Length: 376
Ligand code: SF4
Image 1 (cartoon, helix red, strand yellow):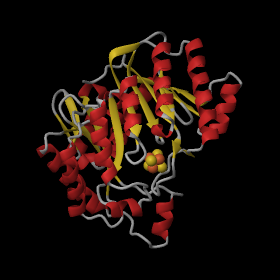
Image 2 (cartoon, protein in one colour):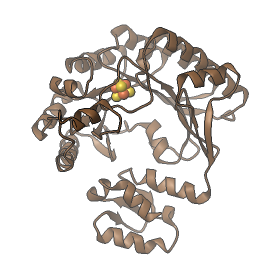
Image 3 (cartoon, protein in one colour):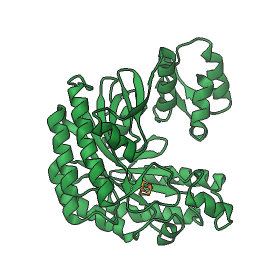
């Protein structure tokens, strides 16, 4: 199902993890009771301020997504109570997709039961790899067997829509290792799989390890082979690739993420969360103390707000829409002067187009942002 521009989502950013993975550059805090308690009070106040300011104009939510960080760093009862509060604050469609991200090595059977009972109907596990040696190189705690245990427990708790996040191109990982990871996940019968190429972010522990020659940087050609292998393997296993990094069983595409790629609106809560509402993009401060201080002072913790012009909205529709395998309507690139750029990109093998739609080719998907910028 794909949302229209009228669809509305809510994102809740829970910025805590037990420890930082070596590749991760997200804003986060190490999970400790005092900052988690401060965050929880501040988040309740943020919900209350948005309700008083009628930020959502009474519109119903089609999706709710608890992401992070690791949302399940917070006690499951607290997550359940937050979801109840959100539903009491804003009308929520009865068929809304309600996702929670979880770390397979720290979530318990009881947590999963509490979350399913509370109304979370989709769970996304950060599996990353099914080879223990990869966990060492990327500094991930836990063991790969935890993923199988967590998925089985989630299914017993009532979750049927289960995503696994994977990474490829990890240090010392070769094509057969990657295929083995995909193969060993199939018995778990996930409904959705996300495959992300490892990128090295400045300032991370992994960037330092590469600078010290502990590991080689990711091999781009190998990552391309891994991407093609994943597409072949997962297509044969009954998944459809519907976005550059995302594969789903029929009807299980992530509706919340589709909002981002199709110009739908969403409100983000929590430190560093981003929003797109009423034609404006805005973001919360990426600092827990500043976030809590603002809310303590009865102010929303918004640091920047940009009202998009018509041409900026068109650019965003292209940049995000081209990530989808179905591409964008040709009329989204309405200006006649772009026909020449489209023809050039088709000649280079980066785009394909018919009368109605424009899509990236498999080559174009590797350079999606560059293609979108050239079209704009
Ligand atoms: S669990 Fe996710 S958010 Fe937390 S440190 Fe690892 S990659 Fe980053």
